[in-house]
Image (cartoon, rainbow, N blue to C red; front, side):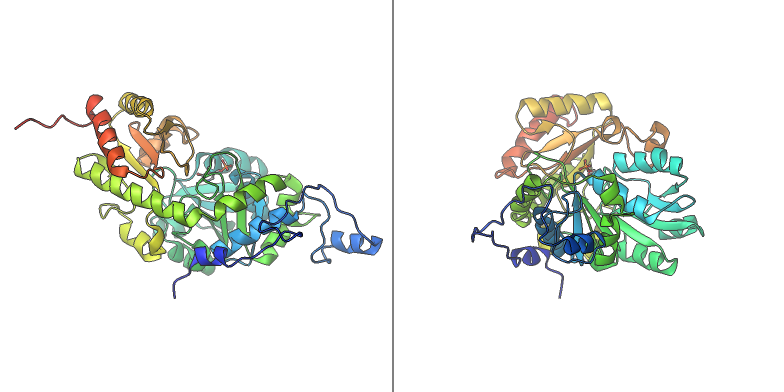
Length: 405
Ligand SMILES: *Cc1c(COP(=O)(O)O)cnc(C)c1O
């Protein structure tokens, strides 16, 4: 039977201490101990269920972490103050000076910048590869490699990683496979396909309200304990802890994720098909023209669809900017980075979210100037949205006026 991530969330039950249907928010940075011995044991990591200090963990953060662990089917999870606050401790926990990472070259700009510019200062080097070619990935592995890193669906080019294939390589070479699943929550469950660690930026679809940043690491109890270790845990020591008020609000939004993902996917599928029919260069994993359409289909939990992200290429940055400004004026969405909001968001990744990637490398990976990335919103009337977008495209000359016969 296929893994049912939304059922796992639905089946969780936490009551507040006064019987509230929502768990109480833990609004304390520190916790009292009835005996000094218990405090000592807690420091040593031997007092289950005791809280010490909220940078370590808090009841509210545990509730959210457990819900996300259920969603990914991992033993447990640790929430963080942002997606980068989840990703960077994972990599620093798994790698030390002299170690090596093999990473997809099409990843989130911040993660790319961290691996390209920051970790070399710690003598951790990364080889960036085309993650869709397993032979290229394997050839990049050396004796020093500790981690294989990718996004299940990549930002912004929507390349799809063969997670089972990568997991087999990781196993063979004794590496940890770390997968960023931010673009495809519920649709793809990387841990079920063999990933060792799954990370998310909660900022995007999972929270879905564009009102906070947040992150999570899902993995084994052993790995999460390592991250939280008071002596050498990267999450504990780097300190990117989520605030309890925020984890409580994200937990509430998580409950509607399954409904939202279905609508994001339905709307994106509709627009992608229409744009492609109109002759626009459209990339969407749900289209059979997508090079990894079959692969996505083989990995997905069908009911959630192919996700809310699509790209079109309108030829030049000027045209892209003109179109985005016009669409914003017509209230079709916002010219903004990020994703997963109820409104459609659009941006030109080459000059924004992926600007950390040098121009020649952008060209090599197919990240063109005229690329517009859309995070499709929850519009109830997507046919109307399409007609209005089409009118904008005609107005700026991206689509030809139909000749009157
Ligand atoms: C946004 C994003 C991140 C970073 O998350 P923050 O919450 O902004 O720190 C990482 N990976 C992907 C795929 C993202 O889209």
